[in-house]
Image (cartoon, rainbow, N blue to C red; front, top):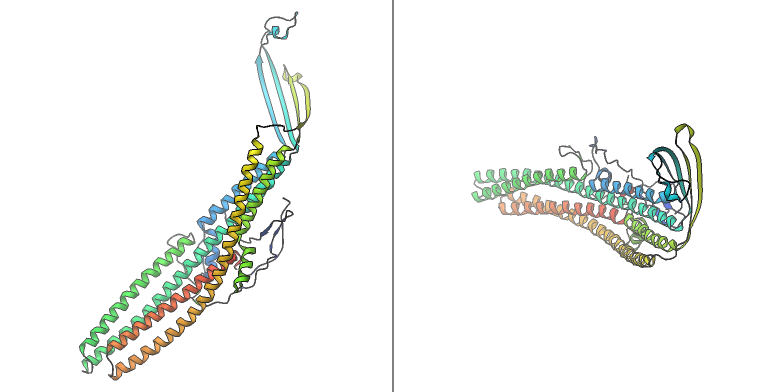
Length: 458
C-alpha cells in the first residue's frame, strides 16, 4: 500500500460534510478523515471550567471515554504489529564476540604427521554479521496487509469513540430532562399551594365543603412527592453523566444547553441519508480495510511460490592473541526457490480464501445495517420533531383548562375536583413535552451517530 496522503479540508457541524474529505491511497482504498486527537492513556480527563454544552459532552465522551481510550491503545498495538512485519524487509545486523579455551584431537583430521591431543589454547573472535532481503513478494504482501489492519484498527477506534460520544450525549440529555422535570414539579408545587390556600379560604368562608380542602391537601402532597423524586432523578442523572465523561464522581458540572429543537445540517431524506452513511460510517470503512487485509493475506500465501532473493555477509577478526587478530569475510547472495512443503501452502490458501469470503459477507451485512440505521434515524428525527409540536399544543390547552378551572373554583361554581383534574392534566402535558424534547434530542444524537458525523461536531 502506498503512502497515505490527506486531503486538506475543514469540517463543521452545521453543514453537509463532503464525501471528498477522506484519505486517498494508491491502492484505491479511501478512509475518511478523523480529526479528533488521540488521547494519551496516562492523561487524566480534566473537568470543564465553563458551562458544558451538548457538543462539549459528546466531544469529551469521544476523547476520554474508557472504551475509546482502550481502542486507541489497540491502534498503537496494531501499528506495532505492522512494524514487526516491516522488519522482514529491513536489514538485520548483529555483532558477536567470543573467547574460546579449547584443545583439539589431531587424529580427527587424518594427517599422519599430526597425532594426539594438543595443548590448551585460547581463541579470540569478533564478528559482525548482516543480512538483507532483496526481494520477497510474500513479505511485501504481508506488510501491506498489516497496514490495512492498522487502518482498520484506527477506524475501529474512531467508531468506539463515536459510541462513547453518543453515550455521553444521551447522558447529557437525561440530565436536561431531569432538570426540566424538577422545574416543572417546582412550578406545580407553587400552583398546588395556591389552590390549597384558596380551598381553605373558601371552606372558612362557608362557600365550599371541607372535602375540597382535603382534596387540595392530597394533591399538594402528591406534587411534593413527585418533586422529591424528580430531584433524586436529577442527581442520579448528573452522576451518570460524570461517569460517562470519565470524570471524578465529585465533579460539579454546569450545563449550558436546554432541551429544544435545534437546526440540523444533515441529510433528512432516507435515500440521501443512506448514501451519506455509507460514505461516512467509520465501522463500514474499517470492514472495507479488513476485507482488503484479508485479500492481501491471501496474495501473500500465493506469492510464497515465487523465489526470494537475499544477501548475507559477515566480517570476522580472530586469533590467539588480541594484538594479532586477523580479518576475514564472507558474502553470500541467496536465491530460495520453494518446491514442496507438504501442500501446506495450498491448504493455507484454501483457509484464507474461506476467511476472505466470510469477511466479504460481514462487510455486505454491515453496509445493509448502516443504510437501515441511517434511514431509521431520519424517520425517528422527523417523528420526534412532530411529537414536540403536538406536546407544546397539549401544554397550552392544559394550561388554559387549569386557568378556567381556577376561575370557576374562585367563583364558587365548581369544586376542587375540577382544579385537581386540571392540574393533573397540566402535569401530564408537561411530562409529555419534556419526554418529547428528550426523544428529539435522542433522535438528534442517534442521527449523528447513524450518519457517522459525531466525530466532526465542533
